[in-house]
Image (cartoon, rainbow, N blue to C red):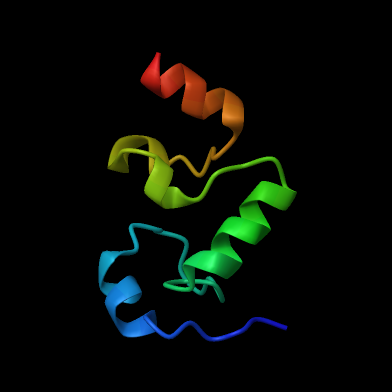
Length: 66
């Protein structure tokens, strides 16, 4: 069950995730939990061109910022 965030309206405006229909859009705590459990990082950790690939792996993060 996804909890609602107290800052959801502000977070939705800032969330760079391009995955349409994401149930965690703007809910940063739930997003971070979800991605870390999958050994990934959320969209906000990547520049737009990398985020659009949906490769959110730790390896891609390291390669991006090396």
